[in-house]
Length: 221
Image (cartoon, rainbow, N blue to C red; front, side, top):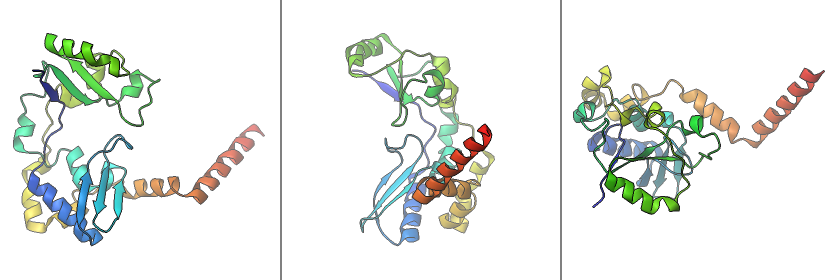
């Protein structure tokens, strides 16, 4: 038997997730039939929601989703997550699996748009499993120090923010929708939406290209 452990930030309550789904259904006046926290078409924190009436909503940044925003900043984890005894080295499994955040800093030649995994071989049994399967992958040898640089939970537990002591009580008293628009709302929301609108607009892209061309010409002159 081969065992594997995962690098984990923490886990919010099921009740909080259910409240987020209800919030989305109320916001879009439709029933959620499928929800994705992650998708290989967009490596990183994103939210993709399919509704019953063939509508799909995609938030390409975790900062546009109150649920993912609160998750990324460790506001809503279970209390045990902040005291996790497994977020450290040595790891518990024969193999550890994680996202290799910051991989392009160490391997600039890798195409990272669909994500890059980090694999740690921790035991002789894990080494044997890796040797038998590595021919199926494109892989590069790295180090624990590089792997942990942008993946803190590989070697340490998540720190509990001060808001965690009261956040579930606030949700109970004020409602999830209110907290979603205040505590769980990123200060960068408008900037991100504007950036996405420009990127998705043909006219905006045309004028941006024209501006860059004029700027280059003026610099030469």
